[in-house]
Image (cartoon, rainbow, N blue to C red):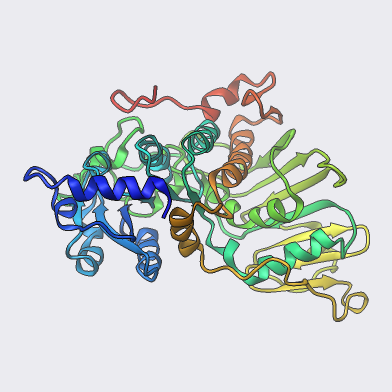
Amino acid sequence: MNAHMTRRHFLMSAATTAAAPAFLRAAPASERVRVGVVGVGNQGAYNWGELAKVPSCEIVALCDVDERMTGNARDRFPKAAFFTDFRKMIDAKGLDAVLCATPDHNHFHVTHRALSEGLHAYCEKPLTHTVWEARQLAELATEKKLVTQMGTQIHAGDNYRRVVEMIRKGVIGPVREVHVWVGGAFNGNGKRPDAKSVPKELTWDLWLGPAAERPYAPEYVPFYWRRYWAFGGGKMADMACHHMDLPFWALDLRHPTKVTAKGSPVTEETGADWIICDFEFPARGELPAVTLTWYDGDKRPRYFAEGKLPKWGDGTLFVGSKGMLLAGYGERRLLPEEAFRGVDGDHSIPKSIGHHKEWVEAIKTGAKTTCNFDYSGALTESVLLGVVSYRAGKSLEWDAKTLQAKGVREADPLIRKSYRKGWEIT
């Protein structure tokens, strides 16, 4: 085990005062990675379910602000300490790592506090709610030399690996054009829902966290918060980190120089019915400049209407000088098919041991994860810039070094937002 974990477990085994929380007193020093999970229902339940399969991981603390979501986790981990405030969970000590599966608007504060306290971190996608937050987490993780992973679980799939291998080998030639599309939308009517009484099981103030105060409404909790800008970022923020991950990986993308989004009429409160967004990336060494176009709602690349593509669900299309590569989560196809019969990836990228296991094992060994915050932070920044361009209603000439959209002041509060009193980050 690395020195960081050895020291932490020594401290945990030594700290056995009567005032210590139960999970700290009861747990003997061991080689298992002790994890606290923040947000234990829905996607959180999936995450703790996957962590529970990793023999070298032990879930010792659970945190959720909504008692209605906690039953399964409490039953599965009866010895774990339970908290409603993630700050108290982290401050209680006794953890090696924190997994965050809250709504987007709380990702940054949970994960920033964990990293600041020297804890390794796993955070669901998108990594953060704003561009500035993503950069802060990436820099903090690097400074602290901590093991991180963003929850883009499909990155561990074999299909993505074969696609990446073929693109990197140049099977379809240099790629200057990529299209990524996802159906559906997390939209709304542009209005806040009517206020209702807060359920007794929900600590509404903690659910809001750093977001500006507003009355509770059942439309927010537990799922459709994604429709509201205050808490999520619509369909693009929800799904682009999964689907744009593939071209980011295959083409070694990082920061766009220009982002231009258009879509349904913008509202102050709720997400878009549809968005089409062009991300322009510069040349990377011998790789040419490339334009990546995102589509959601009912929009798709023109190649479908032109009859050049087969029936397909959500996916990614790489357009190269020699042909095209069409991919989804679990399937891939080189086009035209007759020109590429028998061609596939070379299995040069090893099979994944599992997205969650990779994180846990890297904590023990000091290895680098594939979706660490340096990589996934840049991916998240790009995705969220698409949301910023759409909401600002302007094209962004992007300066990644200074985190500024040149001459577009409307973008500033969307790139870095303000937090309500008591939640400031200094």
